[in-house]
Length: 226
Image (cartoon, rainbow, N blue to C red):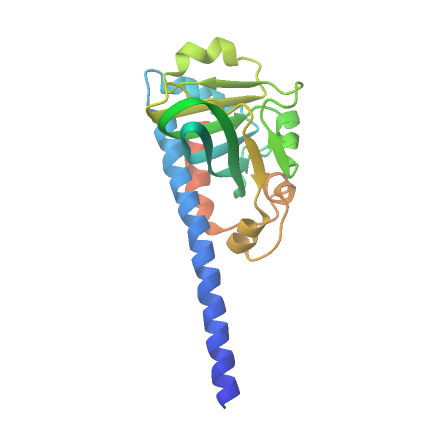
């Protein structure tokens, strides 16, 4: 009987730990939902950001990217990658981290919401690898435009990745060149209760968590092709 009580206690603790881990990932998905709404409705011409989204093959949503430093700085944050199939349906999210380091005369803190549109299959396949460094592959082009998107639409035309950023803080701009995107297998396991690759989630759409439905609905709202 004592062994049974101990086993039940261990199972309860394991279940609580799993629920907490999934809760952390669900919180990121919820923040990503709000980030899509914010970026797609803010600025002088939000319809331009929506046009990018309607043409995108996938989207990488990073609700909060931090950049801080004095002499030595760095930036990073957590992101979710969601893909679209030929019928216009969006997948559940795969989990990524963004990180980089820099050395320079920097002072201040930057906090940004970033939505990166993945415009074609070539760019999406590059993200399917375990790591991708923006700017390292000369075959892949990357454009960053501000929240008033109209100023960067010409520059962004034809880019493989188009980042729309809403920045706050002391840095004047946000540069993602050199940032490394890393697939988070542990986060996927926590959220879906099983192992799955980025391809299985984003392209194959083999796993689903109902908690991601509001994010998928938000992308459908602003990213449905006309």
